[in-house]
Length: 71
Image (cartoon, rainbow, N blue to C red; front, side, top):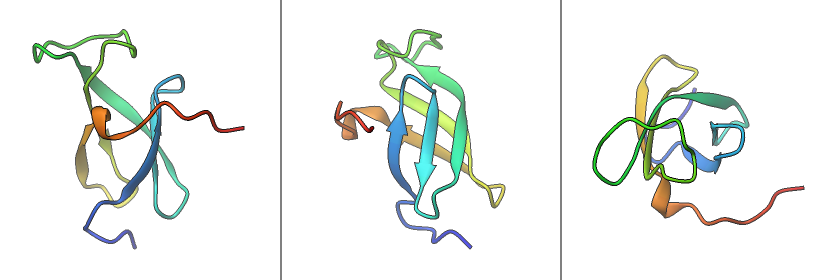
């Protein structure tokens, strides 16, 4: 079970996914730009929505995640 506090540990804008603390990847269902408008451009997105493996929905502040590369 995923703990309720801060389950998202990383995001991949390129793959449009959030990685949760148990290693699961959850695809973004929506992305929003700084005006609150839906966008398909990951570079413009400042927020994203995804559904966690346990069925809960999560809003993600993408500005909280840096641009570090993962190899």
